[in-house]
Image (cartoon, rainbow, N blue to C red; front, top):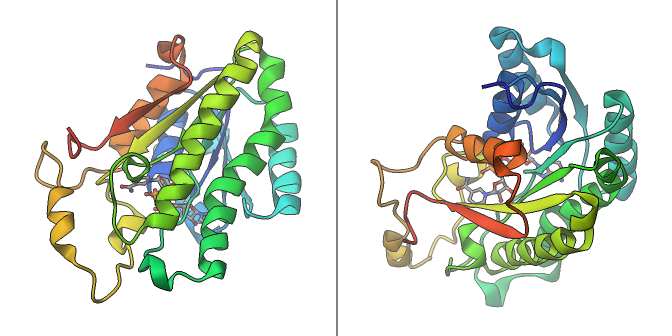
Length: 254
Ligand SMILES: NC(=O)c1ccc[n+]([C@@H]2O[C@H](COP(=O)([O-])OP(=O)(O)OC[C@H]3O[C@@H](n4cnc5c(N)ncnc54)[C@H](O)[C@@H]3O)[C@@H](O)[C@H]2O)c1
């Protein structure tokens, strides 16, 4: 399948996990991609994999801190200029931190919001003019199963993901007449950098997490399982999908 031939995509969080898998999926399907991340070493590893796959001629990387307005303006603006426009934005960058809510500092809370929610807003705002100019732009945002199903000790994280879902519904309606589609994916139980160590408090009551097991398979799935859904949503196969979220959790919350 070559659903992204002639299409230009920007993927944040592209130095690890699901963002990286989305980069390689879009490249494999013929797209041209700018991979953005705050982690330079992660981007280098993403690039090395593209070299091994023979797709690196359609990949460039850029270091961007999505929580920093100037970094987004320079990095995302430069990426779109280099691509000569933008058809697909995948906002995968994010952080997960856990804490007892009564011990959550304002600094911790604000950092979660700054990266996950404000970062998604800043990148989307910077990309919107180019996405609208194509008349068929697509934004894929990253919610989480935690937005709709309880994840104790992750109240700040969950709140950012609920905010991203709401943000996505609003822009889907606001720009639908200009051909833009905006959807969220809500992954759960995907092996990645952040799920390798969710940083639960040492005295966390982990009995709750026994419920958070996929019904399918033998445990966590790989990030490519989410990348395949992103590719469907961002391609013409998702042409009638907007203003909604797709849960990808192996039936954990079935
Ligand atoms: N893995 C899961 O089960 C799961 C579940 C629900 C939601 N998600 C969401 O999926 C998305 C991808 O996460 P992942 O699971 O691949 O984790 P990951 O930790 O492997 O990847 C996250 C990437 O975001 C980057 N990043 C962090 N802060 C950044 C910043 N300020 N600017 C730019 N880049 C930044 C990191 O460097 C990293 O490369 C996240 O939004 C996450 O919240 C994942």
